[in-house]
Image: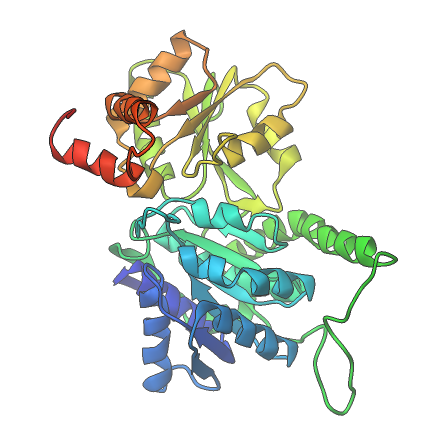
Length: 415
C-alpha cells in the first residue's frame, strides 16, 4: 500500500509485518521513532503475539535480545551511535553465538565532540563483529531490507544489521510502498530456530572455548558470511518475485556501461551522486556510480568485476578511519589489487555536513584532469584547520580543538 509516511514509521510497520515475538527497546536519536512506532502497534493491538520490553540501556537491549533469540523467539532491536558502542560486548556475543537477531542501526556520528547527525562511523566501528551488514539507499529499500533481513538471519542463523542513514532516511516523509501482511507471510516463513534453550533438552551455549577449537569456531562464522554472498542476491530475487520490485542485493550500478570514472558509496548519498552524474553526463563526462548494498560480507569478486573497466574510482566515505583514511576505500583497493585502476578516497558528510552536487561535480572534474593525492576531504575548511594547527604549535595550553574551531567559524573568519 502506497503511503506518504516518515521513514521510521514505514520501517516500524514493515518490521511488525514480520511478526517479531520479542522487541527490546531503548531510545537513542535517530532510531527512536522506529521503536516508538512499534510500541504503538503493540499497544493498539495491531502487532500481536509480541512481547515489547523497555530496558534500561542499549547493552540491556541486545542482552535481552540474545536471551530471547536463544530461547527460540523471532527478535528485533535498534540503536545508533554511542548506543551501539555501549552494547559492543553483546554485539560480538550475538554473532559468536550464531543468533538470528535483526537490528536497525540508525547511522549517526560518534563523539567526542557530540554530534547527533548522520555519518557511518558507528557502523564501521563494528564491521568485524560478525554481523551481516546491509545498507539502504532509500526509505523504500529500508522497508524492503528489513523483510529480507529476517529471512537471511534465520536461514543462516546469523545476526543482520540494517543500516539506515539517520535523519536523512529515518525522519524523511516520502512515498513508500508498505507491503500487505499476506505478501510478507508468503515471503517470510515461520521462524524455525537452529538452536533453542529448552529445559526438556538442556544444552549449553556460550561455553568456554580454548585454543584447541577457537579458530574452528571463528572460521565457521566466516563460512556463514561466505554463504551470505550467495544468499543475499538469491533472497533479493525471490523478494522481487513476491513484491514486484528490485531491492537489496550485493551491489547496484548506475550508468556504468561506458564510465571512465566510477563513484562508489553506501547509503542515501547515492541520490546526490546519481543527480550529479546525470548533470555531468549532459556535459560530456563519462561518469557512473556503484552502490554497495552488502558491506559484510563484502562482495570482493563482484566489486572487482564491476570496476575493472573504469580508469579511476572515487570512493565516497561517510566515515574517517583516523590515521589511515577510508574503510570502504581500503576494501575497494583490495578488490582491485593488481590492476591499474586508480582509487581515490573522498571523505565527505562527516557529522551530517551536506554533500552538494556542486562540490561533488567540481571534485570529479578535477580528478579527471589531476589524478594525484588519493585522500581528499570534500569542502574541508583549510584556513580553520591551518590556524588551529598553528595555535597548537604556539602554546602547550592551546585549549580544546572543537571549541576553538567553533569559535573561529562562529566569528565568520580567522581570529
